[in-house]
Length: 186
Image (cartoon, rainbow, N blue to C red; front, side, top):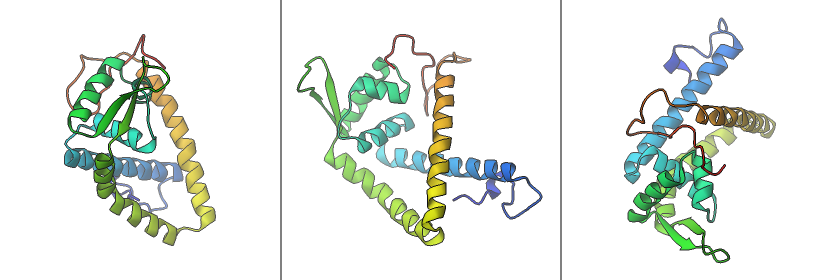
């Protein structure tokens, strides 16, 4: 977990409110997650939106492009372009749905899964070992509750932001979303 020093707040300093120290710790943690994701994207040769797509694909056996569109907050056209890129890199396969030929199923390739897990495995193993060694099971239950609860709050605000028009023309690079999706599936 981030020390909080990146944002200028000493977590051991009792002069700051708990809320301020928590906010600084969360901000530092989010920055570390963003940095890790950026390095994974670099090593995999993808952009950060493509990486988020791969994260979703690694968490499910298969998914439709429409569901990816909903989870990523992208238009179906943007998802198709992204899937073309990832398929060209041999990171995913597209197959017709067995019951509905109008639908396509997306799956991560075994090679992409192996490469991804090879990159994130050391982090997952190290973090798991160190966290289990530092916190009791009851403390970990509280951490799980906090992370689940705050994720729900953040996801609600992601949806709120997706409904707002962008202040400028679509930018290039990094994490980008088109703003309101009008006719896109929800």
